[in-house]
Length: 161
Image 1: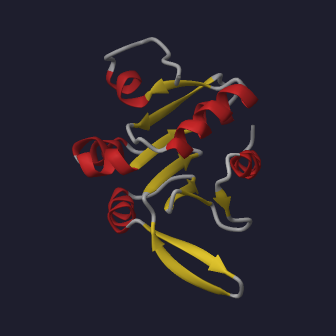
Image 2 (image 1 turned 135 degrees about the vertical axis):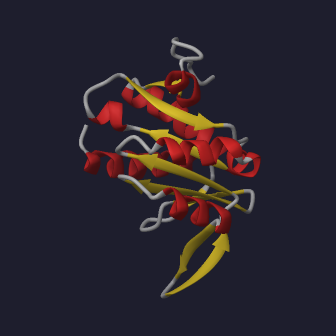
């Protein structure tokens, strides 16, 4: 699975979201449900200070016709094509506000042919839960909790239910 494939996965997922009655954007990577915006950020990597700034501001650009407006994203999912730096993971884990509103998905193992990817998702976002179910059912992807796998606390794969 190549990095461009991640864009196709997200595009297909947004089509599925329409069946739930959720509003999606054709050109931006957000989904709206119950007046809450769930933003997806696809990246190879990000500097920890940039991550902290972006997550703290939680802005999302919404196109309306020919104009744009900026809204606050209720939730943000970061989808990494390379493993995020440990310092970024530490920032995430040390800040309860981040972990309640932000999910991290490290898809780099999948892009290299693996069957499992790492995640940190402690949000109550129904969109992110559906995204995980979608990845499992459509692509057979299994999830391993990043904190457990990287810190040796647990060696088993955990599935999202």
